[in-house]
Length: 109
Length: 436
Image (cartoon, rainbow over all chains, first blue to last red; front, top):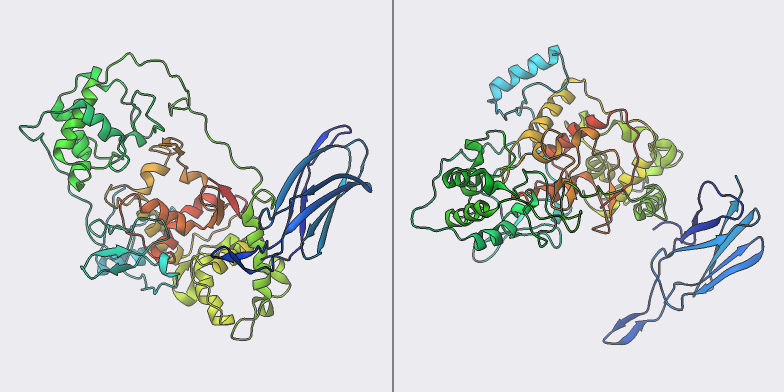
């Protein structure tokens, strides 16, 4: 497995002012879930991404709570309208208190 | 081209001619005299081995979910398999059997038999998906062909068309004589005019060709990229022998392995055989680090992708001029045109433009070998949710054709892969790919 917490973000190569931009983001994460046997939990050491927070130039534009595990290396896609150039920051929070951040610069062409 | 097997003595004469240098790459007569024996270093499922039950029945050990049927009666790509292809048989309809068109149609569609619809189009909205490798049979009844002629075409078409791609169904026992009588009765009922298509996708001649899966090097698009990057840790981890890949290959895989993958598969002198990166890892990995890298294991595939990614964008530069390479390519090419298995198919039947390439086999669009198959392998298969290399793709292709698969790291497969790689020469490597 690659390094935990590495965030990969993809945006279109060419963005114009006012465009609706589709962002694809992925974080390397193991997703350890509660192991059960006969309905009883045997290992409660769960560890997964439960919250995603997106900020644009410091302003929060999206906060999503997954409430439960989504996937190993979870992948999220969303859109936003790019009105000004700036920095898009995506933070992934996991159940062990880890916070993994990735940023991408949005430039107009 | 026909497959010719030489005696060892003749073979050495042919090799002498090779060493002197003939014009034209890989047009030589294949020589099987100097191919070494190779002990497989693959995971158990990929070795092509068998389990013999207490009742003496042989069950093939294959990947999970694959058929365990033993196709031992039919010839394979193994160089020591000297059996000829089944001889052409002349056949006549058995007396006393009356053909039933209804039974014939069911047989035409039966997935356990052919299905005939994999290659031939017939009318009916329940025909899904039909292929276009063979001729459209929608109006064959209008041609007023004699029953005996159609019977022969299904039983063993090679008598009429020696170069056909169609399996000799009767000769190999894929269809029983009375079943062929039913099929002929059904074909004679197919008369025009053909009703208009409700769905253009049903008809392989009007069906849209599939588009790809987007950027194969985008990790948010292709999960194989993450697996390949995961091998970075393996690259740096010391094996039981106290050494890591990184100890000898300085500067990380991206720097140390730049351009290496463009030269594979190649003849490796130290082991006396053609090897792809996967094959080389199975011996080089344990020899240096002490860590096993069996063919088809996750470590082997991930490390192969990791090494190949260092050459992404560089043109494939497989070596084709040395005597060893020419001999290997002659054998690889012979395998490509060799008819094998229960269905008596050759790779060339489906993957050359003059035959099946760029046509539909059922719902699958057949690739064209001359456009290059190997530059994006290993790849992510969306239909299997897993990373597959060329060898597993070979094994996957060959099992439904009715032949026992060879070990994933066999010399036969390596030389076939090398032959296919020559079509990619000069084209940029792009690993891992993403395909259905």
